[in-house]
View 1: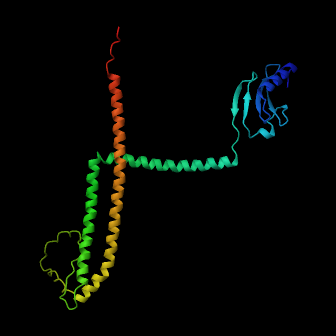
View 2: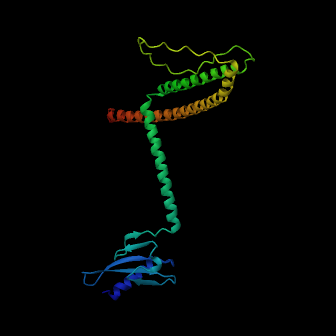
View 3: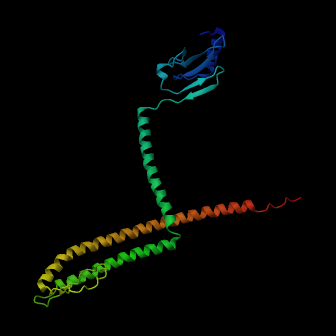
Amino acid sequence: MGWSISRLRNMQSMSRRRHKSLAVTCALVVATGMTGHSQAQLYKWVDENGKVQYSDTVPPGAVDRARKELRTDGTIKQETQRAATAEERRLAAMKAVEDAKLKVIQDERDRKDKALLSTYTDLADFDRVQDRALAIMDSEYKTLVDRETLLKKIAALPPGAAPYVVPAPPAPPAPPAPPAVAGKPPPAKPAAPKPTVITQIEARAELPRLVDSMMRKKRDREDIAALYAKERIRLAALIAANDATINGASQKAAAGAAPVAPARK
């Protein structure tokens, strides 16, 4: 390899100064040969017995360990970190999956925040939308309550009572009737009221379904109200943060444009 005896002794002396630990370490030294036209790599390490060893390949016991590549003057040229263990690789993979999930959640939160700020101009605007939506649900619930009261009244009629016509649930407005056509028969007359006993049977059969609808409507109203309350808190925080950013930028701009007072003599 073209090494001089004096140069090898110098390297051994430098090794004793730099490697006092008995732990197995590995350093890569790039040295220039005597001719100056070729380069060789020499690995130097301290074995378990404290002896300095040299070879032109990485020691088998240090392949996965941290090592340093040194220049001929002993300074560090490159440092290689040790290889990760199987447990460390497993934990790193788990962390990568968890980080990916958190990023998806954060991206969705950012999307919702942007939608909130672009939908409502201020909290008063948000409150108007909230009150209108809850008022519609309250009206629908009241309609169900009125229907329940009527059905209970019919179910409680005494035997032999006069026929009772149960009003149908409110329906959307029908489209305008077409103009009458000559020669067309008139519309049929409404059917006669059903006997009271039939009306009571129908009312009692409808009551459980109506009560179930009322319970669902009440839960829906509570869920919507809770969602609005949560979104209002978030919107208030976003507006405050946005205002603080704007005010901070304005103050910096004003401070930069302020005239500088002359220095006192």
